[in-house]
Image (cartoon, rainbow, N blue to C red; front, side):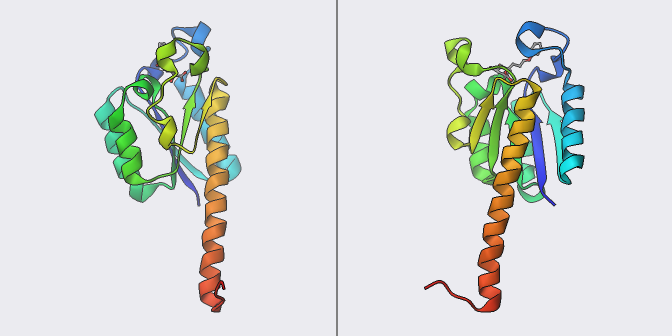
Length: 164
Ligand code: CA2
């Protein structure tokens, strides 16, 4: 079964209560419920966590190495500042999709720079809660393809078939 860790960065626990013109009226609980529904529909395991602390996010990423197949992360403000999050993602080597509720490319210039995007599979930005669903679907597809390729390699070994 595919296992995906979803991480929400700082201040995302405030969703739905303030700044609704930018981030909408959906709360973090509602986003996590929609993510849970998607997981059940697709038959995969998803765990979602939020932290306001960079070190805690780094720790969760490190621990994810042995328990998850991939990571979907909205690093929130750490997107634009955190070498620590980037280094953690590179260190564990988990396929990662970066997601944002708002379109970070049409806001203040400082939001255009992401420390995470260059080491991620991709970035999805601007679709509200749908950004998470699209991110999870993209990661699932990537992981399924990777598994099929691995199985093909394994079955070559099992049957004694060798590439010329
Ligand atoms: O659009 C996104 O998802 C962001 O990651 C959200 C971050 C922001 O720093 C990024 O540039 C883009 C901010 C999350 C703060 O969320 C709040 C929600 C409600 C009230 C206040 C902040």
